[in-house]
Amino acid sequence: MPNTLIHIASNLILVGVIYLFSKYITKKNFDWKFASILLISSNLIDIDHLLATPIYDLTRCSINLHPLHSWYMFPIYFIGLFFKKYSFLFLGIIMHLLLDYIDCLI
Image 1 (tube, rainbow, N blue to C red):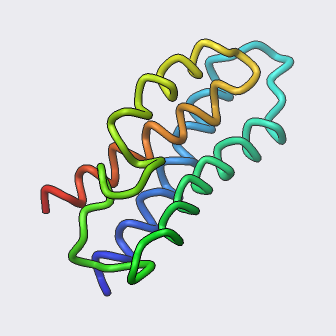
Image 2 (image 1 turned 180 degrees about the vertical axis):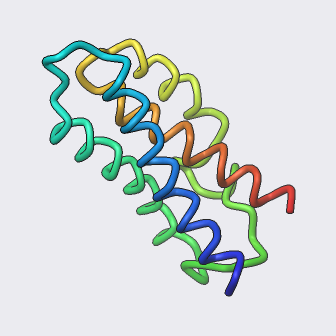
Image 3 (image 1 turned 120 degrees about the horizontal axis):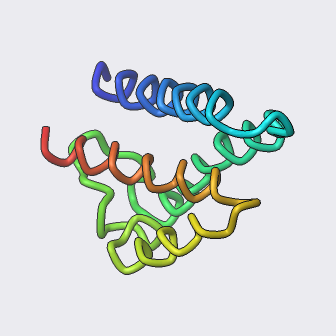
């Protein structure tokens, strides 16, 4: 259970760090509401956990087990970074995958 709380907290902290970093290095017309929605929405990638049995397992590595967490999807997420309007969504997804990968190593 502690690993789960650490993982969830790290996702939320990372979203906040990305948001604050981006807010202070971008132009004055930074739409913080839209960027925040996109960053938080990036966690919806976990919807593919519903395809697994059990839905959540502490001992299971989600990388390459779930369709949206596969390395085959990573190039799509990387290309998405270049779509300026939705770059925060794809940045959040990539960071989510990296955190999931770190969980696999622990």
